Length: 511
Ligand SMILES: Nc1ncnc2c1ncn2[C@@H]1O[C@H](COP(=O)(O)OP(=O)(O)OP(=O)(O)O)[C@@H](O)[C@H]1O
Ligand SMILES: O=c1[nH]c(=O)c2[nH+]cn([C@@H]3O[C@H](COP(=O)(O)O)[C@@H](O)[C@H]3O)c2[nH]1
Ligand SMILES: NC(=O)CC[C@H](N)C(=O)O
Ligand SMILES: [Mg+2]
Image (tube, rainbow, N blue to C red; front, side):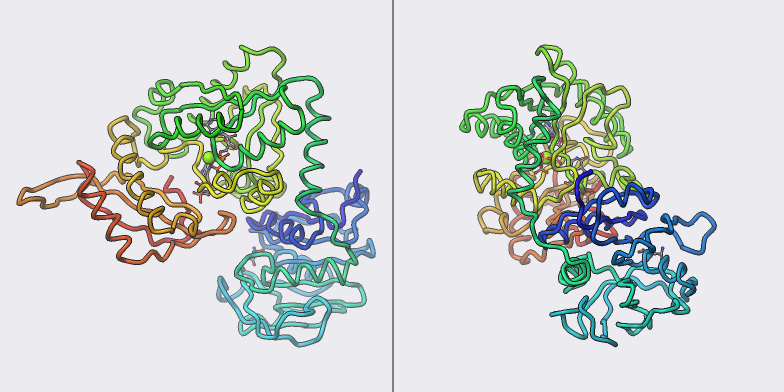
């Protein structure tokens, strides 16, 4: 087995992959394994350190998740985060109890001891907490190295054994210097070197694809979006013309999108196959209002279309998709016991009967890393800067039943909103912007006449990786232009609202 500098045991936190991602930023490769990984398999990776992630369970519960106890006897540095800290405390003779108050949000970390793990970070820094349990009695051999107003045990350590534990989450963006702390753990406590980078990742993936595919062919699902364009480029470098790029018009695309995508690939000299399956998608979605049902139908229909197309070519055994870690974590439990939020069409929406073997080189990384990889591979800037657009397309932006007239209405509103964003230079400054057709009609007055028409919601968010997001603080005069233009120019819409919720607790898409 390949040498893995840091092994992360996953106890089901939504943030586990961010730990790996922060380590990558520090140039350190890590692998995430289920909390139940055997000690032999952990040792086989010859790690220099172990991280125990957070998780939804409580360590004192009967069905709590426990790692192989031997992880504490390997003589390796260990870092426990939240649930991981609570496990460490329990294992070494401390105690963990339900807290009187759940602590969710920012806190100020006060240093109580100097430690290399806090090197070059500041006393009083903001950290982010998310827990309902707390350490009540400190474990034997441990000392407090950091406190917060609500957590007397915000950071603890047994420096002789090189075991550190935090109640806060250093991996999330809200912990302002958390990246540095994780880097310090890797660099100063585990003695890891910074050797990982996007160039080495690309090379590794290309070799892996060549080994996996051999002389067979790969159907690559391309959407014109960033992720699948990067995947197609990696495949082209790896296997040349054994790659068959297929774009599906599912009837759920934005205005002129099909023509734009076709032109973009043509200009790059790619022989793109477009399959028009719009009638199939739309007829299957007719009358379906439940968001998860919509997603499953779309996921399955995509695979049927790819299957049909594959039959027309000899030797296709693989399906390549631009699946990212964000798609995976929200859809299914990955390594640990995490919860399903929504079934992304390309992960949780895949049917059981699918026979393709999947090629998903981006499955463990995040959107902003994909963009860096795209730059590394020489993709044009405008391709890399495109806002994400979900595979299920407008079907999850028309609330309730999906039908042609409603899709048309939404397309018209969407074009106007995007037009204003481009004109004001806000497109490149925001992560994602779209409109949603609400299943809500309201009364208006236009030219002295009563109207009873549809409501459109404008959703514009800022994010780094899509795991969390905040609504964009768009200047009111720009929102006013968007609203005025949509209501004046689109027949059938008489009200525009702006979505001011962040993720969590909302999500970016409405369904
Ligand atoms: N219309 C489509 N035709 C073919 N494949 C598609 C289509 N839409 C999505 N896919 C496949 O599903 C994957 C996931 O979609 P997703 O929207 O997350 O990624 P993307 O479109 O490549 O990038 P972006 O997130 O920037 O939109 C794509 O990478 C692609 O493999
Ligand atoms: O290809 C995709 N297939 C899907 O089924 C899907 N659902 C959400 N998204 C996109 O993922 C990001 C996070 O979205 P949510 O906060 O709504 O989960 C946002 O960028 C969403 O647009 C999808 N992309
Ligand atoms: N984020 C976490 O790891 C939470 C740990 C534990 N479930 C608690 O509520 O305290
Ligand atoms: Mg897309």
